[in-house]
Length: 153
Image 1 (cartoon, rainbow, N blue to C red):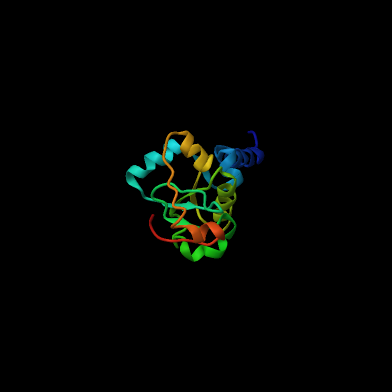
Image 2 (image 1 turned 90 degrees about the vertical axis):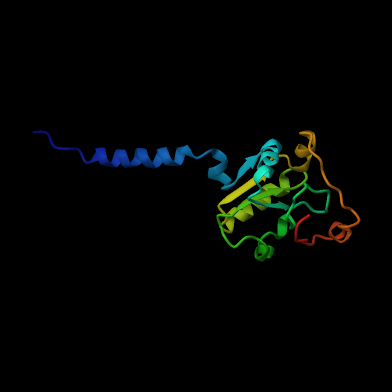
């Protein structure tokens, strides 16, 4: 009668660990947020069930239905403005994507689990044929210094 090898259960466990780890996309492993296209964001507006945050400073325009304006480098300082539920769906954008990448990573670091970043930001949004709102006079104070503005647009 042959002895059962102790290596087989260990190898099976090792396989499962690598399989689960490998099933995540490289972006999910690295950042804990996902990029979305302008087309995807536009579809999401059909049943808006997310908070849309413009993190670009200074003010350079906005996408309709933006809920919050929080400077990308002050996300943690203004956590009280964010949903308390860490599983809440949050979509972040800026002008070109650099600032929203930073803000999305910060949101992940402070525990948010459902973060989506508009890849290419407002530039990609306009290039995809969608409109951008410019409220220069209304947001003059926001344009001059990185402050936060709440409420619906």
